[in-house]
Image 1 (spheres, rainbow, N blue to C red):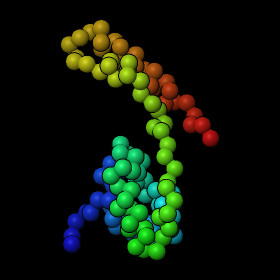
Image 2: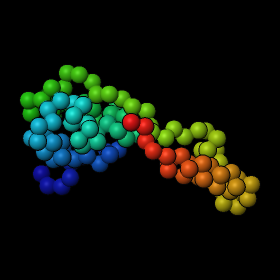
Image 3: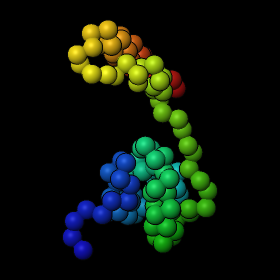
Image 4: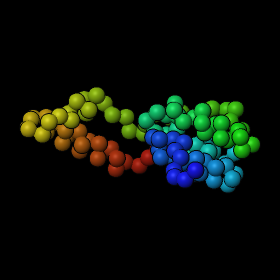
Length: 113
């Protein structure tokens, strides 16, 4: 079969990338997730974890323990989402600009260790 077979649609991780990571020694689900990035997108592994665990187990890896879920790094408040409206509303444009400025300020901070 030719073409790209996606294992994780959210993070664009292919079956080939999973198999390559397993061959490189990432033989547990947490290590595989950290190396490939599967399970870190919108679905947080809900649509790809079973497939990735099945591939890992078939290649002799350990898929018995779940991976560590983490919340998004920068949570977005509903107020910021509500500020995203049509371009013709000047007051809402100011709110959206303020939200972007606040986000950009926050993005410039160092990540916690």
